[in-house]
Image (cartoon, rainbow, N blue to C red; front, side, top):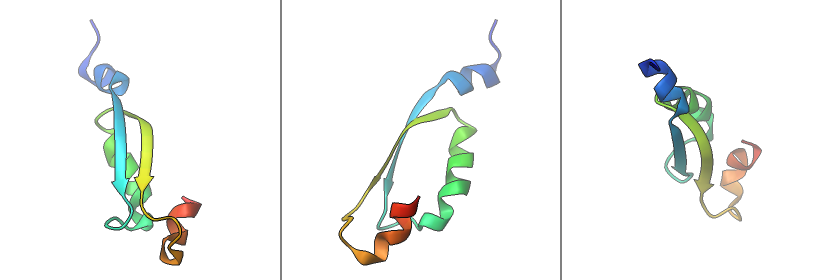
Length: 60
């Protein structure tokens, strides 16, 4: 029988981020927290990529 931790690691998660409201500096900690609940297999960051103030997100 598969234990709870193994079940969670097999759980596929989609992570959708609003780049306007979440600083790019928080992405590492955010993904670590999400990984506690499953495998973040789809990751998307939404924003207007023509804006110069979002250049840090482009690096991520």
